[in-house]
Image (cartoon, rainbow, N blue to C red; front, top):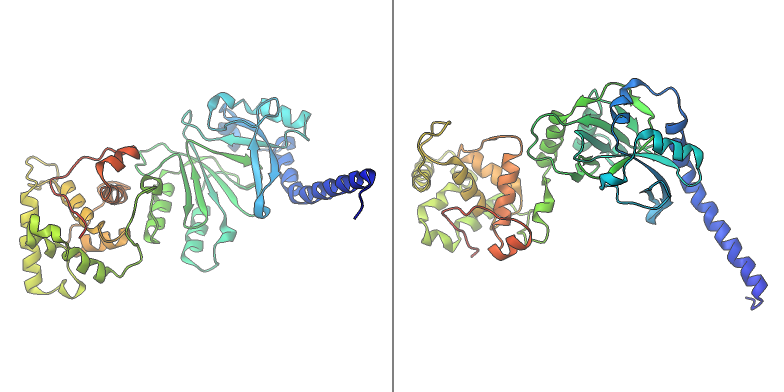
Length: 377
């Protein structure tokens, strides 16, 4: 150890140079892939729809924690900007010129997803999934979909580009953690683009593909739009269904509504029992009588939506697992998919309903009240 100022300065310089060298080792592969995007003249016309959108930003790379690399969107002066603000976007030719003219400052091209257009990005990190697992099989099937697909900037993942041209009830601006390795960007975020196409085909309508991803995520026990439930005190999601049903049937609230309604939550051993079937029919008659409605398109004399939310609200007192709710509805022959995402949104509304009206307002939720309220035991 030395106290010599000159020696200390040399040590500091050496340490900084070593740190820079380590960062260059981590970032250079990203820079090489990024450079190909704005220097390659052999890019096909399949990219043209993206090029015509004024939705581009230059960006650079910064080494993050745990070996991760951050992609930072920039303005024309090299300052970091909010990529979700369309005022910061520019034509692709402008962003590419900045990257070509000042490669040390502007290292990559980024395409931003905004409400200004219908483009959606699907980011698949296949390498994160166990080969042979259900999630890996599903992700592999997704990558077979015929739409423009390129390698991600890290070289191990894939970026799929599509458009949403049909109603997609569950789709929000950003979805992360789907099946443990998939993210969907619709009206926010951006892709740092390599243009290293592994499927060089026209950009397709991916609405059905997005719904397929959501369906598979839910089947695996996941929840869509988990952000709707942030900050709420949720019940466990890993309990055994039969125990959950016993807990629901034991709730004190039945004495305030109608004790017969607890038979709408049948145990497995009761599914085919004649007496239990009769009890369930009587319970359903009691419930539907509370929500009469004439002239429905489905021909039923009651409001089926309220039946759905009533049963969901009771289940939500004791479990956060949507599959528990689905199984109970199937045991009652009441399960239905009114539209893509209907079941998930009904379940989310039931879980939000566990909080007080004041808590729901604080989260920006304004749920329509149903005629029946369930309170925890």
